[in-house]
Image (cartoon, rainbow, N blue to C red; front, top):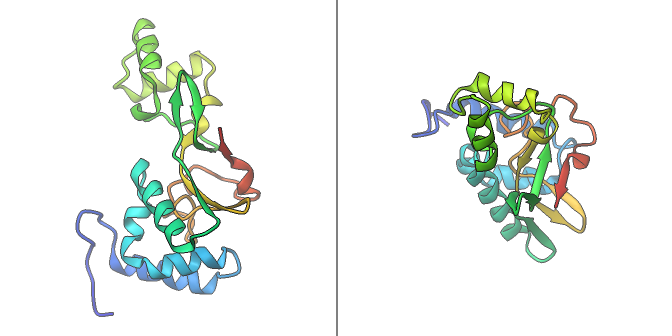
Length: 182
């Protein structure tokens, strides 16, 4: 390759991405061939697909569905509607305590309890005090389904740390059971 350094704005080292691609080739039996083909074809976009935040998974799912065509359905990213979950959600092992995980109603309740939403420890206290640990393990996510089979081009990755959820899910057996479309 002869290229070294970082990809602008992502900080992802080119050598790291190349190592991940090598791991893909070695571990093709662990991932659906459609995902491996997709990742190999879109090496330049992997840093975008695997970043946290809602746009990475949506972009990856849309790109994968466009490539597959026909029977591929993009599950829209989860959101709240009238205080109920709709769309795609993934269940993790760890409650998410980032401020973006809280609804405006929860932020208001936190303030009423004398807690500061901008303070991570106060957010953890709010979750614990209100017994919301299970609720905060759900993360909005988008993926592709083909005839009932889940293909997640951005959540989990071969190196065990590049995907959005690799650090949040300890037991990676039966991953399909963690995906829910409300």
